[in-house]
Length: 219
Image (cartoon, rainbow, N blue to C red; front, top):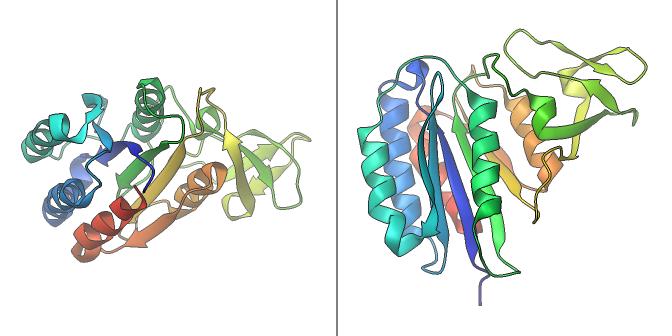
C-alpha cells in the first residue's frame, strides 16, 4: 500500500502570475487534489507581498473544498515573499500528526524570484560549493548573483549544491519545486530539491496544470 502523504502546496499569487499562469495553477491544483490518494493530508499557503493564505494541513476529505475555494478566490498582485511562504509550508507540514512512515512534502509553484524579506534561502537550506566548501551566506533573492563560502570567496549560483534543511524539523520534509516560464529562478528550485531529496521541474504556463497533476503522483 502507498505511504500516506502530508503535503502543503505553496502557490505564488504575485502580480506576475496574473492570467493564464494563475488559471493553470488553479486547474492543476484541483486536478492534483482529485488524483491524490484518499489517505493523504493537505494544506495550502499562498503568497504575494506576504504569506496571505494559510489552510492548516488536514485530511484530504476535510480540506479539499477549503483549498479549492481559497485558490479560486486568489488574486494576482504584489511581489513575492517566496522564502517566507516556503518556511511556513515546512512548519505546517512538520507540525501535523501523522503516521511515522508518511511522506512529508512541500510543493512550491512560482514563476519568479524571491524578493528580499526577513527569510532568505540560507535560512531554509544548507549549501556547499561544487568543490565541497560550505557556504556561509547566500540570500538567494532577486539581485543576489554570488554566494559567499566559509573562506569569504564568491561562488556563482550554478556552482552551489543544496545539502540539507537549515530549519529544524521533527521529520524529514521534501521540497518539490515547479518553476513557470523564463523568469523563474530554476537554480534555486534545484537547490531546494537537492537539499531535501525531492524533484524540480521547469514548465511553460500552458503545461503547468499537467505538470502539477503529475507531481501529485509522488504522494
